[in-house]
Image (cartoon, rainbow, N blue to C red; front, side, top):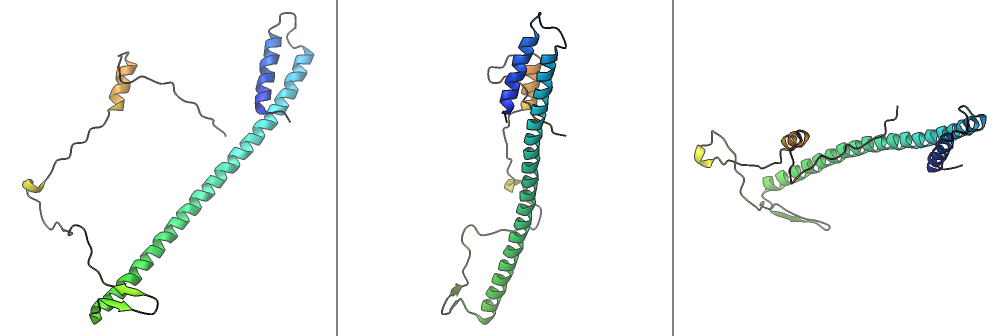
Length: 166
């Protein structure tokens, strides 16, 4: 079966031939070619769309599976933390800093890094910092370019295209 690009080339050849003034409008040979070509291209398009929809469905299934697995991961993480907290609480209750078994060494350790703080009231101005963030104002740039202003650092680009399947 010919490729989709072959069909596009065939359309171009037929249209070129139809521009010949000696070939009358509605020439039966051209009509037959076009009908056959349209039937073939419709089959090709249907095949492409079938695959596109299949890939979209599989993407949806994978996304749903990923969300399910993420939820499961978070549940296992909560269970792990709960068990660790229980074990540490039990060790602290009996005053054990370290327990060694035949297969494991468990220690209650202090956390490193900066000592945590908790804000419990209104912070005074001397402890407030201002953060300035620079961002490109793309809306302002677009308006300037659309109004005909020439900017050395930006230019309007052509809008892209996409395929809509309904």
